Amino acid sequence: MSLYVYLAIGVLLGAAGSYIAERRGRSHVEGFILGFLFGVIGLLIESFLPKKNN
Image 1 (spheres, rainbow, N blue to C red):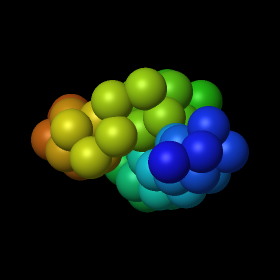
Image 2 (tube, helix red, strand yellow):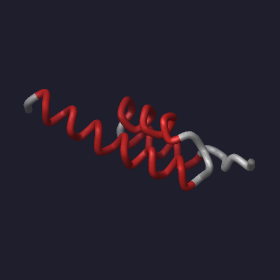
Image 3 (cartoon, one colour):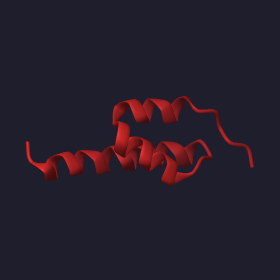
């Protein structure tokens, strides 16, 4: 597959991680990085991290 396809998949998973992180009260940047770098495993990690209380 093309490099652009891998980047597009990474960005989509990063966006999903960002969404999950914000819903749990965590940093959206943290969620994007985990989703982009680790893919589905990063999404699972983000979803199992404890909620932050402000």
